[in-house]
Amino acid sequence: MRKQNGFSLIELLIVVAIILIIAAIAIPSLLQARISANESSAVASVRTINTAMISYNTTYPTVGFAPNLVTLGGPIGAACVPSSTTACFLDSVLSAGVKSGYNFAATGSGGTPNTTYYITAVPVTESSTGNRSFCSVSDAVIRVQTAGGAIGSLVACQNLNALP
Image 1: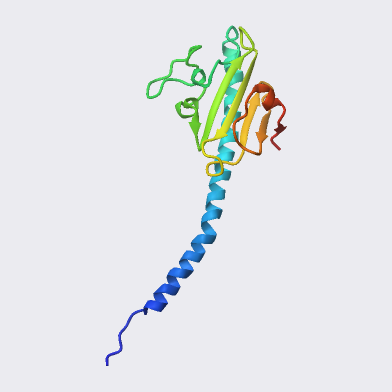
Image 2: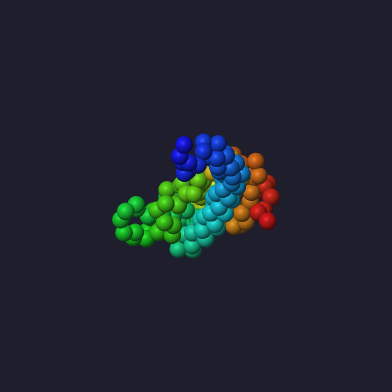
């Protein structure tokens, strides 16, 4: 009989089993890293929206704070010409309301001119794109809801703890 070169079936099965064990350990860590990155991006986006709201209020004092998120952005795919309806303070991705696994919303209120605003960032799919929700009001303090989910109102946001 000739001696054959190569790996036996048992050796190949052992290698595959080792690879699967390593993957089972690594994949949850990668998913948690993605969630952390999405949450960091959401906080940065809320900060950006805060800055855009303050800039809008300074630029258009007769309107006050922007009535919504779309007003802070500009048209998609076209040159942005600043006005009170398309302020060009945000990029088209963020002003559309969905970025890095989070849904964003902003609302100006308090009369004419708008004297306050309310921003929310809620995970698109809780526990897969993010675990926490974020919000901010006209004091520009970012607050966190550790349970995730929607933050129902400006008052509910003000009652949350500030992001450390």
